[in-house]
Length: 438
Ligand code: IMP
Image: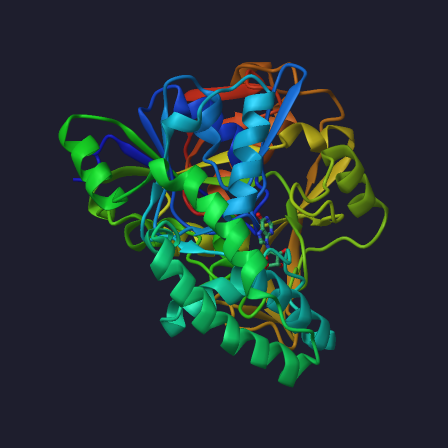
């Protein structure tokens, strides 16, 4: 079944920001439909075409390619104001694509009280804070699980929305006052603003499960785009320092109403090094000059919040874990060119604690394990002009082979710059050799 499936899922196998936006944009050329299935406006997917740079938060990155049907699944939480701002931005950039977008009637809506609650919960958590993007994501998913959420189908039904908003706001205002000493939010302005958002988005709202099943039946090729990264998965990531959705391939079925059994291939995206934003364990983090080099050279600042990203060496234990539970078939290595200036490159092949190897990826990181490093020679040459494997320096190919071996997973593509064409597509993937990464 998997081999014959024509649909593809692209996910991050680190903590997000792996460069999925560019990869989805490039791959979308071969697909008819591009789908987001989880997360919300916390995501920031950057696509650079010539002098133009687009940053998408809610709209699938496939939108830049002409003629693609872009779909936002029920697993996404939608901030309608952010979505409309993104649609307007596209228009300003000359891309009149609003009619190519479909939004699930079952997707939950992010409301102003979610954003306020996100901020006050973070503020009151002190050292236990997550470092969220403050986009209201956690509180919105909380309401979904608590069964008091408001969905797109509710938003576009004026009476229903007015009733649900009134009931929800009353409870949220009590929580804001009693727990956080915050002022109540007013009902009327929210009703007015969200009714206007509903008018704009109504024509785009539909049953996405049916849409995808129908697309499949007519022979369409569907590309699914995971947001964030697998290690931010609420169930399997570095909990509690995670986002509130299922970010790996495993989130696809529940987030769309389309069976994951129909997906042919899962591509896992990893940078040639590691980054994460916000709090949480990061075993290979570099707090010195090399970390600063990676941040500066890789432009490692959040696409959504502008926060400087924490940077470090590639962590193969983490990537292997994400590949295993996320059923990843092949890897795409991004930002390889960022390492061009380094004379030595380290890779963590596993963790140890008190001198003993840590076998399984831990459910928490207290006490923190230490990385087990291998040091490889750098190549000290520019790679951003390389388009074939044979263009790369020998040390670079060795580095890629080391990753494939250490992950036990083939590498299908390598990205060496921001532009669409800064890409090495491997007709013959770099296959892992017999276990030699450790
Ligand atoms: P939230 O998703 O805003 O609740 O944030 C929870 C955690 O996920 C924080 O550490 C965020 O920095 C992180 N996060 C959320 N979205 C992204 C993303 O798109 N890239 C990287 N980190 C993210």
